[in-house]
Image (tube, rainbow, N blue to C red; front, side, top):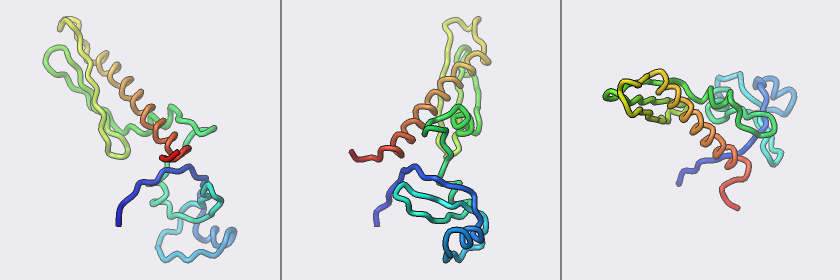
Length: 147
């Protein structure tokens, strides 16, 4: 079998398997997990997903299907800052999905070098890239991959 990546916008709310069984419909579920989400797909299909599976696959979006500053900030798990040579700052960012983004900042004269300023410049560029990537992901989820 071939493997596929899926992108879609869904609606969901936290709901235990017991609540789902009582309020929606009886569910055949053999796992140990009791916490999860009621999921409503674009075509109206309703299902239940265990919490761990759901939270690994889905990220909440902003009102009106937007990327928010909070999403961008929460997608970055850590920054690493270092100086290369006498006048270059390198910043690496680790994202929640394991992806890494790097940016560099450099000045002309080593006498003017300030690692904190270089890091600030790099972090802004990285956040701009995360905005761009999350925007791409959101657009794909809204419109699909085929026109």
